[in-house]
Length: 111
Length: 113
Image (tube, rainbow over all chains, first blue to last red; front, side, top):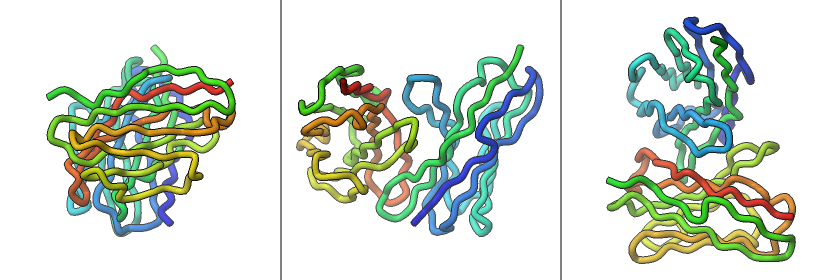
């Protein structure tokens, strides 16, 4: 059974800081890994999708890496802004076409 | 293309009632998956429908059911509501191929009193 863990559970940083969110998964047989953002009471916004054959993806200030063999992914956020405050979720797509989600990292960026 | 839409956005029901939630996928997508999000359990997979057939199922009781129509729109039904069914219900659509990216709707917030 696939299990996804995210560390840390919560993070508070001053504006402008670079930060790294971590995600680990137990079964390396995945199709892809997605990072999502969720604002309070809202749905999920897809940030980055990394296919199992890829090592990293970049979008603006965001960079996500994937090491499938070790079951790890990191989301790097450069020059953080207060608008980045949200919960960040990683999810892996495995057989059965279902996403298994981590419990998320709640990020607060202080002005 | 329009994104995934879900209706209604908010719903309040009482215990014992039943509820039906609707999800319209992105045009051309044939797969719709449903997820439940609660503070205690996080995001959990309910089921997936592809071409009007349930293709995958999570570990939820039979009170949770769904269906998909020929236009790929999907409905989820919960019967005999319990307080613990209060949650944000999210649906996601994809092309339906193995490993295809899933796109999420805004969710339906269900409150059971």
